[in-house]
Length: 353
Ligand SMILES: Cc1cc2nc3c(=O)[nH]c(=O)nc-3n(C[C@H](O)[C@H](O)[C@H](O)COP(=O)(O)OP(=O)(O)OC[C@H]3O[C@@H](n4cnc5c(N)ncnc54)[C@H](O)[C@@H]3O)c2cc1C
Ligand code: SF4
Image (cartoon, protein in one colour):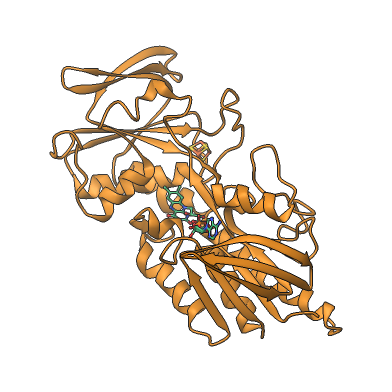
């Protein structure tokens, strides 16, 4: 028997938008989120201000949450996980477990929106000393300090004099096996560099990059203002090593524009870690029998013309499940996934999609 229900797995920005859209189009929706709260990585990892326009992450994601949960057609299960799926498109039985209880939800379609995780900078890039030096931090650690309006040198609690960002940590790296660009980290580092200059006006801020990859309008909104108004220093170079020296960090590498070795002292080093599929994405892809690429991101039936339909009829994907993306792309693909899931239900019920 076909069901008019869509199960959305993952309550981040993409899952929230897919939920809101499917409900608006007339479907019942069960939204399953494993964390105790909705909002996804931007909320769980305490992101401060989001592009575009340095908007508060809580405000922006809060609007998505209100939209998704405002409809009586939406049932929200937080602290819950999907443990098994049987049946086929149009007639899935989805086992949902929370706090020891397990029940089955009948669904015609499934949208997978289980998102990404930050690359672990302790993995194979030991030369940066993430777990060794307290003043070597990652983008998400910087976000949390910026959100608390307290950007300090972690080991001393004092405002830093010199801050460096190192780009492409865990991305564009053949040795690690992540050859892809994570798309957002150049823009996020530049955004954070501006925020550091605003919160600690005396700090000098450097960004060490292979090449800067700004996404669409971020070029004008972030990159040029960072250089021209906020005097962030962009250095084309490769950092090979971070050492502790005289109570500070010492960055060693090569300034590739000048073609000479460099050694620069820093108080705080921020590693611009890339995006990898979350453990939930890997587990759910496996459980649902979805095709994945060599990095563990889910593949869709066409990488250009259909970016949300999977190899399993009735299962759709959106957001960072399919690869690194910013919020604009996550929301767009989520709308498409929500709409295609409802179209799939209607086609199954004999209603023209
Ligand atoms: C440091 C950093 C800063 C960023 N800042 C910006 C910015 O300023 N502007 C911008 O446009 N983009 C930004 N991004 C990108 C943005 O965070 C992503 O585009 C967005 O979070 C993707 O949303 P999502 O819903 O696909 O994934 P996520 O936000 O990762 O949400 C996935 C959700 O699925 C849940 N989940 C996982 N597994 C399971 C499971 N098995 N069962 C149930 N639920 C599960 C998770 O708990 C989570 O709630 C930033 C990224 C990084 C790394
Ligand atoms: S967005 Fe920038 S920092 Fe991130 S992987 Fe691409 S080039 Fe590297």
